[in-house]
Length: 499
Image (cartoon, rainbow, N blue to C red; front, side, top):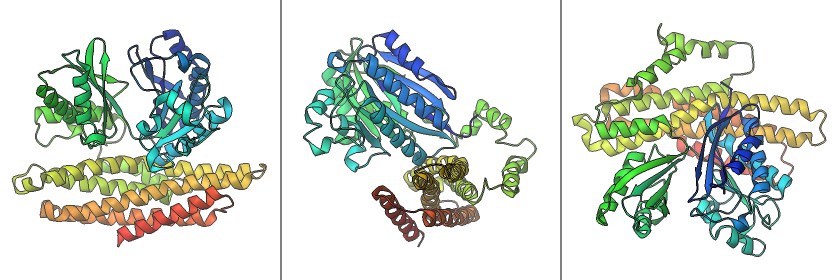
């Protein structure tokens, strides 16, 4: 498996002509990139392609896909149920292995700049890559669709793209590029052809109109049935089973029921494990109870048959080796991940016990958040080493480059962003560990003490890396000065959280 693994799920405005979709997919086939899935929907007139690959390769694949879509898709002739603003409508990057969300933000900005430069297509950044709070939500950017943006982009300052000239491509429109967590595209079909019912249910379930957090929803007519079409933007905090039950309950108000549901693209195994646990009401469920999970962990070396030492020893020996990576940054991330794991264990073993039933909501919230933090910190172990290697490459390349300082600063920004994220997440783990003390089994107090100590060490170590990198930067441009200022503000916020 590559050291870095990123998922990219480009959505193209073509769901009826298989030949065009084939050509777009073919354009994205380059070494280091793998096609996981492709979905075409004629009613929506949209296709969703799921790719995974190494960081550099998948960026180029996405850029080439946009270029091919611009050749083949004419939005002036496009009609479908799904809103759209570009031939390549939206290009999200999702961290999978050895990559953080901050890495994906940097990727989104690089890809956005390249799309504008190569194809004269304006680009907007969204979600974690957004340049303003108003642009975090895709719906805000896409409001009015292709036609509305075409009419306003040159005159409305709110429509100014992040990259490219303030004019849409005549036939390919504009493209949105971003970084986000894994999204589940989930649709529920109702036993009615009344699309107004689907729209009312979608309004009830989506967060923007008072529904469930991390849910976006709309109502459509698809294959002769009313469909509640949803995007679940954080399935760990708003799980898929809760969404289905909400839709089912709302449907009953109108005398209809769900007849089926569908996943567009792929779904994480964890989401299905959560649904199984909820519907089966299994006590003290843990994913390691699943045979395939246990086998994968053992065969992959994550669980050592010969004892715990065999599992952790390779990483310790790598730290001891006379090489620059992995170093203190990776060790900090590992310490933070272990802290999150310990706190998660304590909360899980107290949840459901009679003495702590009154704290069920708090424990559920802590478990969900610690799961996310643990995964992010594990990813940062490799991401920190990768960012250091990038800095070393930049210093070498700068000797012969006219813009050497810019290359170095760009690499240092990435090498700063990763430990900044580690420090923020580790400080949050320490905060959660302290909050768990009065609502969990006191016999496990030593585990929480260890978790808090590891989290504090992770925070201190990561901040040390941040400060070294900030001190090495030569801020010569407004963007570089803005980065330095923002990074120092984040450091101050972490320091205040520690106290």
